[in-house]
Length: 416
Image (cartoon, rainbow, N blue to C red; front, side, top):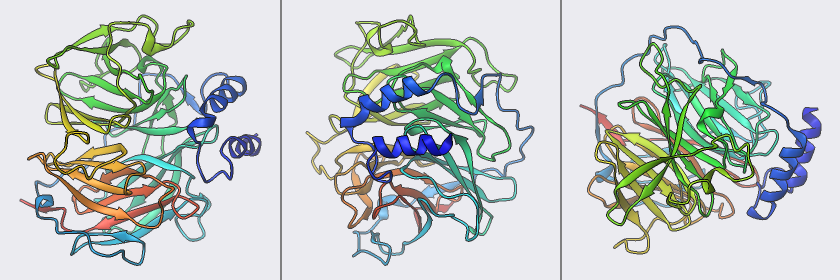
C-alpha cells in the first residue's frame, strides 16, 4: 500500500523530488479526499505521555547577530556565510542519514525545530511536504554534535509543511491541504503521533504556543487565509493547553491594528463552507506562513505580500515588523518559515527570492545570515537553532535535485 501511495505522490508531483506546484494543489486535495478516510498512524487522546524528561536547562545566551559580517563566496557546500562560520550536510533526501541505516531521509523537507535531550544532545525534526506519503523525520545528535540516530516520527500524512514546537517537548505537524489536519508528534520517536482535529480543518501552515495564556496560534496558507487562535476548554495537569477540545477563533483586525477574536462555528469543516469563510468579519491574510512565539509576541509571515507581522498577546495589537514594499533595505523576498532566537532575533527563510535566511534584528534592521547558491528552483526551509545557539539547521527543499539538510556552525550567540 505504501508503494502505491508513493507512486501516486510521484504522479501528482512529477519526478517525486521536485515538489508540488500550485497548479496541482486541487488534484492533490481531490486524490487525498478520495483515497483517505480518517487519520494515518495516529489516534486522538489526551496527550503524548513521555513521562518525566530531565532536560538540561538552556544556557543563558547573548546574541551576536548584529555583528555578522558580509557574506563570503560559496563554500564547498554552495553556502555563502559570514566570516567565522562553516557548513556541513547532515542529510540528503532518499539516502540514509547514517551510513548503513535503514531510514532514508524524507523528500521535500520543510518546517522544523530542535529539542534538547536528556544526555546533553538534541533532536532536529523536519516535515515532508510530499502528498500521501509525507510525515516527519528526526535527526538525533549527541552532546558533541555527532549524528547518532535518524528515524520517522509521523508517517503517511499529506503535504506536511510547517508546524510548531510545544513547551512540553512535542512537535505539531501541519498539513497544507484544503482539509488539512494537525498531528502532535513525539520527537524521541517513542510514542505514536496523535491527530488534533480541535485545532481546525483547513490549509494549515504553522502553529505556535503562547505558554502564558495557554493558547495556540495558527496560520493558513491561502490567498485569503486567516490568522487563528485555539482556546482550550481545559488545561493539562502541567498547565498546558489540552488539545482535545476548545474554541477555534479567527482574527478580525481594525484599521489601528487592534484584534478581536471571533469564534468559528464549524472548525471541523463538516459543512460545505470552508473554515476561513465561515465568519465574514474576520480578516484575510495573503498566504500565512511561519509562526513563532517569543516573550509575549507572536511573529508570523505572509508570503503574498512579503510581510512579517508581530502580534502582542497582552494588548491584542498587531503590527507590521517588515514590509518589503516599504522597507529601506528590501533584501528579504518570498518570506516563509521563520524562527525566533532566544534573544528576539527573527530569522526568516526565503521561498525563492535569493535563497537566503535573513535575520530581522530587534532594531528592525534586516541582515543576511546565509545564502544557498546554485539551487534557484528550491526554497529554504526549517530554520532552527540547537540548544547552544551556535548551530543553525535548515534545508534546501529540492536542493540539487533532492532535498538537502544542512548545519551551519558559528558565533550566532555566546554564553552570558
